[in-house]
Image (tube, rainbow, N blue to C red; front, side):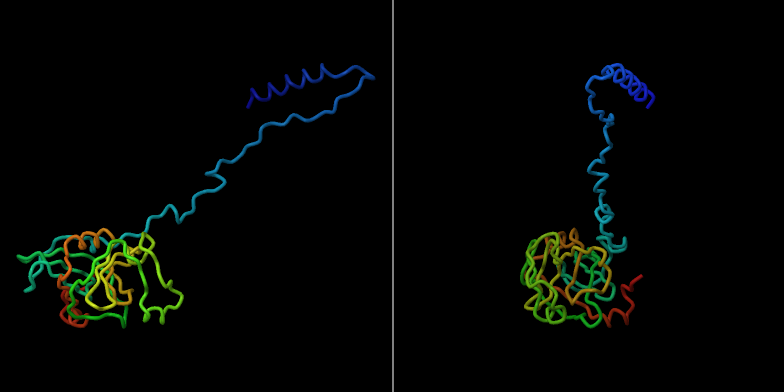
Length: 219
């Protein structure tokens, strides 16, 4: 700062000595302008808070892991424990891979046995007519991709409207929020997708049965 002031004083002295003599034509005086500060792009357009925050991850208890699991079903069977919001892929010998899932909200749970009839990577989404009647604001079609609510993979269950699919809302894993489909974190649905085949048996346990037995109770 000091060297700038010294420079201004010297410039002023030179300017005064250069003034014309009395009676001579004068030159208009323009005040000396210092360079103005200009904010950079990062200061003019700071990043939004939303852009800096990653989506919340599912609770640690919904992390994919191999667990002890007793069942009479053969290896390769998928068993969905609706009440506990877990999906089990049976490995055999008393073991299974357990995944956290999101399930149907009140009034939209179901149970039964189906088989996987179709598999799709980054599936398109066409909401069924029943859903559009309840939620007419939904798009009639959405191409597959990161913003698609079906996520990275989908496994279609028999001839029903239900699927096991990924999600772009991983924070909903462990909750009851869907219209009956089973949702998984994208990294988990990709893992399961690689293990199952067309024709894989899927058993969806009734929520009342699990709640009554206390098995897999939510913590």
